[in-house]
Length: 191
Image 1 (cartoon, rainbow, N blue to C red):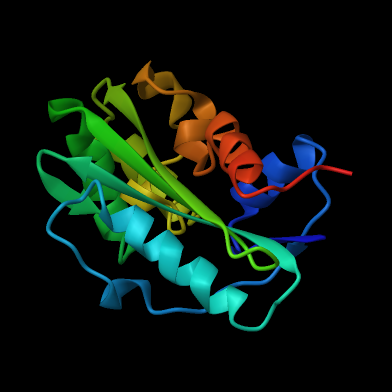
Image 2: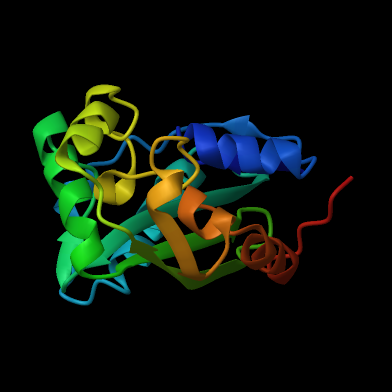
């Protein structure tokens, strides 16, 4: 049975590869901004579900993995930054309140119709990031594809980060233990 990752995220791809999975990447190509919910804990799960269902429409013998991530800071939703300036501004503010990272994972087995889902969270606290450092980090451009505009493993960001809940995988967008439990729940067996 084919395993499909419905994501273009290089971090999710890396996590699956490092765990030894053999899979295809087939992006869902959905408008994530069209999916909204007032409960930010549900939002990434809803987006992941739509991604998985979109890819499932054209694959009848596969297990499809979809995930999404949002950051909530001071009760504000932070998805991917809209500009480098916004990313820099966010970085200078993170020390004021912890960043709550919420992952939604949705898995569908199209051969038996089984599906499973979970939401997982992590909390990150930041030391103050000086404006010039935040600007440098943002100008590199690699924060533009990250929920909340930060990557905890980035060498320029890492000195300012203290993970207080969750694991590094929580912040990379695909917590592996939770995913592996979902795969078992839908009947996927690694070969």
